[in-house]
Image (tube, rainbow, N blue to C red; front, side, top):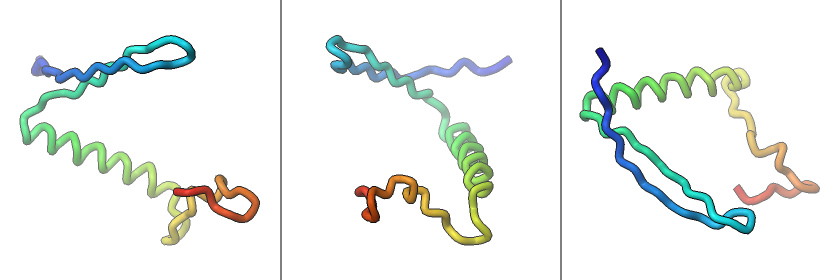
Length: 75
């Protein structure tokens, strides 16, 4: 049976399209070992995703598609 997870909540109300919307950010409160385990798991998955786009050891310029008439938009 999974251990119940408690969440910290941060709520903001922001203007949008002539009205307001409520944004709630919920963060799990985990023991340090579990937090570290999840962090490593996420890092591993991100590595797998980004390594697919690596071009034979060279970094790909992900901002190149945002070039505007020969000058790069601020990064």
